Image (cartoon, rainbow, N blue to C red; front, side, top):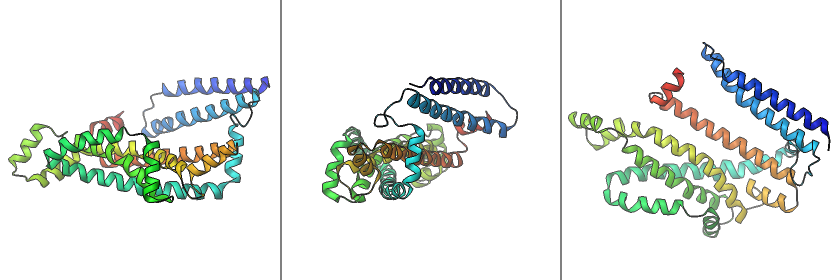
Length: 290
C-alpha cells in the first residue's frame, strides 16, 4: 500500500469538491460566465473522480484483473484504436442508429394511428406495457435466430426496445393540448390533420423528445447485450464478452469507456436538438432565463 497516492487522491478530491461548491454559488451577470461555470463544474468533478480512482487503485495496489487504473485503461484505448473503431462502427453506426431510427419512427406513426382509433388505443397500449416488461436476455436470442448473427438481429432488438417508449410517450403527448386550445381549433373549422400538425404535435414535442432521450441510452444497451448472444467477431458486446473470458479487463473497460462517451454524446445531441425545436416550451425558456 502506498500512502502517498492515497493522500494525493483524497486531497485532490477535497480541493476539487470545495472549489466546485464555491463555483456553484457564484451568480455571474453574463450568460457566457454562467455557461462556463456550467461546463467547468461537471468537468472538474469528472477529473477529480478519475484522480481519486487512480490514486486509490495504485495506493491500495488493486490487481488490474479486478479494477485497472484509469491510466491503464487509457493506455489500452490508445493502443487499440483500430479495434475500438471497428467495434464502434459495427455496434453504434449500424445496430444502434438503424434500429433507433426505425423503432422511433414506427412508434411515432403508430401513435398517430392509435390516436385516430379508440379500438387500437385500448388494444395496443396494454400490449406495449407487456412487451416493455419482457427481459432483454429473452428477446435477444430470439432475434438472433430470426435475423441471423450479423447486425440485423441487433438492430431488431433495438427496434423492439425503442418502439414502445416512443409509442406510449407520443400517445400521452397528443393528449397534452388543453380543451380550450382544441375548442379554438374547432372554432377555426380545422380538420383533424390541421389540428394535429398545428396544435397537438407541437404540444407533444416535449413528450416525443423525452422518448428520444430515453431511447438513446436503451438502444446502445440493447445492442451491446444482444451481441452477447451471437455476432460476427466484431462489435462492442462481442469484444467485452471475449475479453472478459481471457481476463483482459483493460479491454473491457476500454469498450465501456467508448460506449459511455458515445451514449453521452448521442443523448447530448438529442437534448441540443430538443432545445432548438421546443424553444417555446416553459421549461426551455425558464432555463434560459435562469
